[in-house]
Image 1 (cartoon, helix red, strand yellow):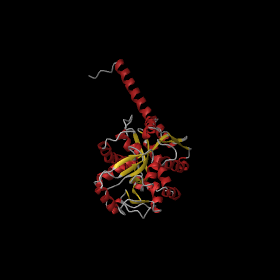
Image 2: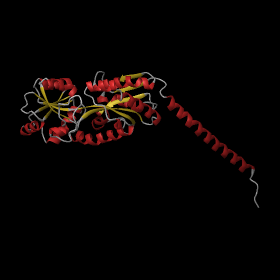
Image 3: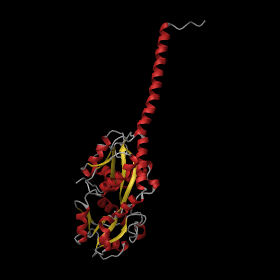
Image 4: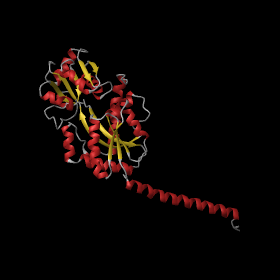
Length: 340
């Protein structure tokens, strides 16, 4: 014989059903609220944090991209320079920011790859950020002073091998792209030379131009005009193919050093846990900006190459950044590179 439920059982059952109902309603309300917030994004200005000083390549790219994104976002875009510790101060600020899409990092190979092997960071370069899009990059070039007795890369490497540790190689600073690019060049070419650090690419290149140092791994934006004038020699660009803006300079593969790929690439990130709807909104705006002919023309004038469309996805940037960390960290750590 089935007994009727006791008053206590009926009370507990009613409370249980009430809690389940409240939980169900709360979830149903939260979902459209989150969706509505994502659909409403952005509703105010978006700040792009550049972890380097104004006027440099990363700052230039950030300002072109931010300005280009303004119409599609429908809100003001602000570029803020937060400098210090090789870019790690500004990058840390974005890592700590609210994950709402209103604080965005525009960094580069140094801030989002090399710094992890050089500095003791308060954040994780991969775990604490969500990738948005890869941005334009500048491949480095192999440059030598005018008096070097070589007219092509193979002869230059032969000259370096015949004079181990005698050549001086200028770079823009310890741990920078030209320094670490030089480490990779030495490893792949089997050569030895003395690195000479400077405080910036400009003073380093000036000593190459003056003949006080023998070589430098630097970008075409620094050296190409002088190479075209015959004041220095540019043997190759550190890429698999020639630059659109410098078709006369062979690629590293063509010149005889296959696999020597080194470029200062840039990217856009937001703090981890940023809703994917917001990430996708930013990504769509970036892709629209990078597709504009006038924007692409401006980048070409700076010897910057826009990544192909398939490399502009969040997933592509995440995979590329991880591959770059796997490539460069062992080289940096093997050389025991320390912050200046």
